[in-house]
Image 1 (cartoon, rainbow, N blue to C red):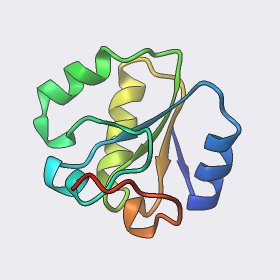
Image 2: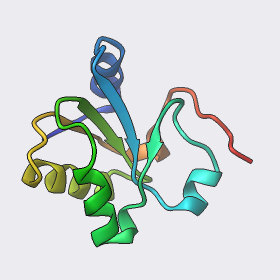
Image 3: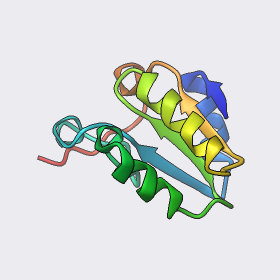
Image 4: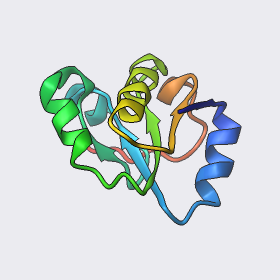
Length: 105
């Protein structure tokens, strides 16, 4: 697990052909917009969230974000415990995101 600045996260993501972007915010937060091609798993679902994480391909590289970076940091720690080797937390979360956002409304 690694905490990356916005710039580091984007640079690493753009050069990674094995990348998956993971949004761990709530449904209400996601409704306000999501990073393109991200998959959404709500961190606050507790055990269900952990079960859904555990079903993901552990050979992929996960770029994880939330609103501010706290939940995604914790999500990366959980992923590490589940056997994921490459999980990257977006420091500052989507609040500081400088890239594209898809509006779902």
